[in-house]
Length: 551
Image (cartoon, rainbow, N blue to C red; front, side, top):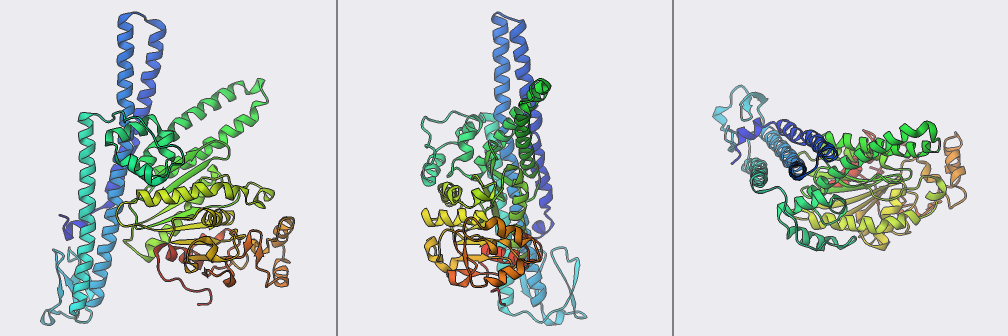
């Protein structure tokens, strides 16, 4: 059982570093696998006969054993990183309890027992607090029985969270240790859920597999596992990290071939640019996957075309609150790290408002975002994205551990068209919808989004050019005009015009939803530190009261 002083001294960073050490072993293991494959190839060209076949077979077995370790390395990284995150949350809760004790005059001893400070024990109006009795505090008023009970409950809650995290991590590591002896992988029975299957059915299928069978699927069918809504985030992350490494190797080989023949094949320049753009996108994703905390989970990846990515900061299956952020026009794989940083800023603000709360933020860039204004004038790409976003949100519900999380879906710019269309046409498993910098969401009233209107939120900055968006044919002129000193004058000429490209402005009170304030931030500044819009988004994610625009 985790003790009070033990939790106070615990260092989550040490566990983050241990997780990184396990994750980084994947590089040497992959290089050794490639080396064995190369040696086996050379062996086949220069040696034949029974002995050669036996040697080749043994090399293949060795390579298979090494490859089988790869999912387990990512899994060890996940276990330790998640333990570090929950330990950090427990410490934050404990710090809150100690701060409350300090304010109310409750004494917390070295064993975490809370009591009122006896009046005769007061000395010069000051006392020592904390498990190490190493912090001198000014003496507050005498604690009441209610104060003592509240502090004691908060301390118990922090210790219980740390204790549960410790037991779970120990159990998962024991299973990995057992798998090292009995075998990392084992083939699963026939039958796989079809693409697009309901996430609840996928979850039932996955739950019926053994850990070794799940690792086999991650290893041998990563493209299927990595995109299947209803498979837990941990397994999808393992599969997609393997895919990322494989696809980066393949693209690097393509780049070498194209570069080698480029002088004689000028037509390959465009192909080389596409390959280099895809590599840059994958490298950006890989960089964030190697960083943290919070640990990132790769839930979807496709380097083709403009590229797609679904990345979570924190494990959405373990968090009490989950934000899904859908970005807008021009977003592609190369933009994913920057867009993910926006989701991360909301996460950071959530931590500032509610220390100790376990929250995750997901970048959902799993649609073909418009690249140019003519594309952005159509709802076609948003309509195509709707089924996928609906299924993803259903998957979050299906794979979540414990009580259901509070789920919030946030769309920015054209992303709000995606969110609105998905909610209207398919319904979204969400407790709140949030639109920022929206050109309309495909409906004229909040109730058409299949949620109670009080759970629909919007904000648009006073100087956001989206306010100047008009029906097709005039957006380009308005956007150009918005960069000139005439923008304010133009907006004053149409102060009551709330009809935007894709319906009524959701930030207008007449839309029927709720609004929250934003500072002057243009079209992309909603996530800037100090902008009340950032605070509003975080409060909605947490389910906390949100100040009204006029407050």
